[in-house]
Image (cartoon, rainbow, N blue to C red; front, side, top):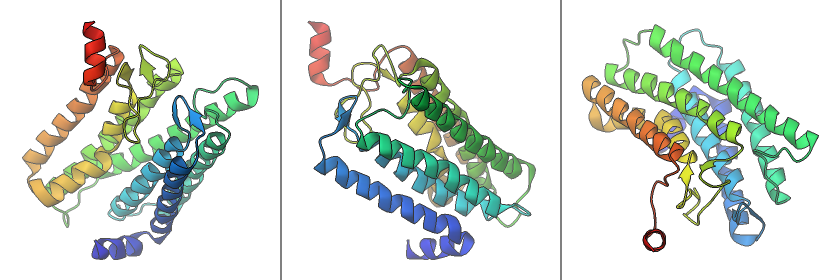
Length: 263
């Protein structure tokens, strides 16, 4: 792990430190979630900024690692795009959480509606930029890298982009759940609904293909065919959970809720 951190810092010092800052902020939000009582949609308000900050940490480090392989890539411009766009989202989400207000789906005032649109624009721009990085991986050959690893990066980015845009399904509904309005359950930090379909499940699974698939391929699979098969299955998992959510079905249902349904 120490060797990885040292190598990452060498590859992209800017995103390395930005990721560390996001990790530190995420841990701070986690502390706030245990020491404050402010709630949004029935769960602690600081869970959401924690999730965004921690996801940004993972994204920044993953892209810092992958972009190093690209020839003639303007990594400096990409770095500052990530920092500005995702930094803006984290700050705004945290400010709204501190007020006990929603950042997403909030159309209660013209200002909040505008900020919601700006967040959507920021996410869109960054997703398109990531898609461009994915295009570069598909259009270039990398003779110095294992073929299975290259395919894991390609497919990981592809699935990430597809299910990043799946976030628009939530934005268009102004709700992350189907069958209830922004329902949350006391399920660790993710808070996925146990009573309604939750679009955040497929969003989460799909976006973290960016980290999961290359790690699996490089350290475990070590085979191109196996990497492609697992990547397809992983994408199908994200798709199935999306269909399940759109049908208004939760990922899991507790025993108590099953008994209530039976009664």
